[in-house]
Length: 76
Image (cartoon, rainbow, N blue to C red; front, side, top):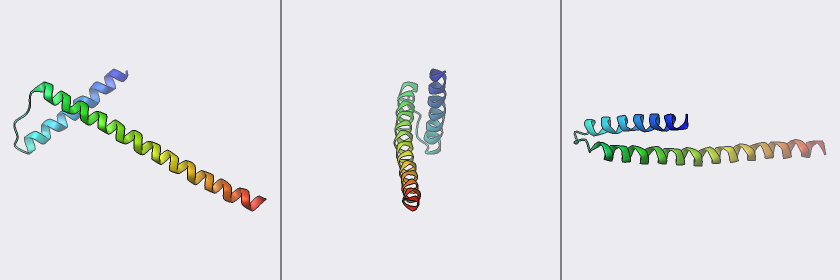
């Protein structure tokens, strides 16, 4: 299942890269170069999502901890 998702991501990315080349009027690179570019873009996207997801999660934990501290201080 994971392989199918990876192939789909790269396929969509490859299509977007092709579209961008055509829009800019540039010649399309060979298929293996497009595949390499699409793999790089997908890998970068995964890293960005992981990093931002982690920072969002940490911020949520901090907010929860602050709220818990406020409630605990009022009771005691």
